Image 1 (cartoon, one colour):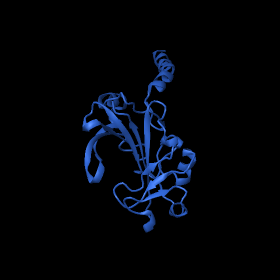
Image 2 (cartoon, rainbow, N blue to C red):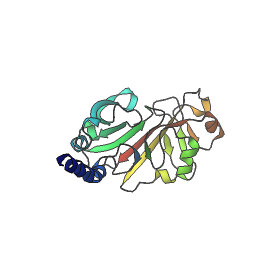
Image 3 (cartoon, rainbow, N blue to C red):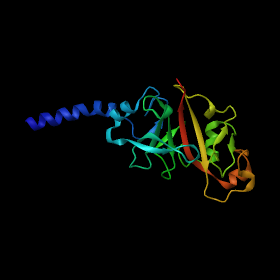
Image 4 (cartoon, helix red, strand yellow):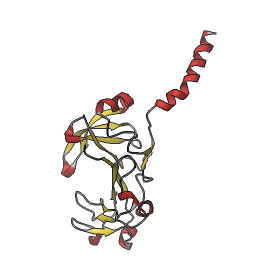
Length: 202
């Protein structure tokens, strides 16, 4: 009888537990799975052993300390950065192509998405930086499309494309800007390798 009562109590509690469990996949918003009001401590309290401090890649080969969600699951990995390397204020989060796909998406876009898919989500063509240098492949201008607008909750997104193919000179180098509907770019067929969600500085 006691065993039955305990089992019944666990079953009745499971919906509430499911509602409070932090997300481990799905759409990323300005408040889930991380909000601008979060700290490293609050994130670690929610995710426990699934939130680990690691060295993360920065600009021009530098690294910085950040927090990684699901470090042992490449398709769930999220990198979280903090203002001025401090763990008090979240500045943003990043998805990278540590796996061919990701279980997360941002504004309907996920790792591995094509140029055409991003253009469809944006609602119009956009501009991409030339490939083959430190900032190559980033979307530099969404041309007032949907992906360039502030998302509900006040965050914004960045997208980077990459390719393992030999890149034509016309699509390469610092200072080069390529339209997303450029036939040469579509033939190259780069895919999304990085998505950033950025919180406004407070």
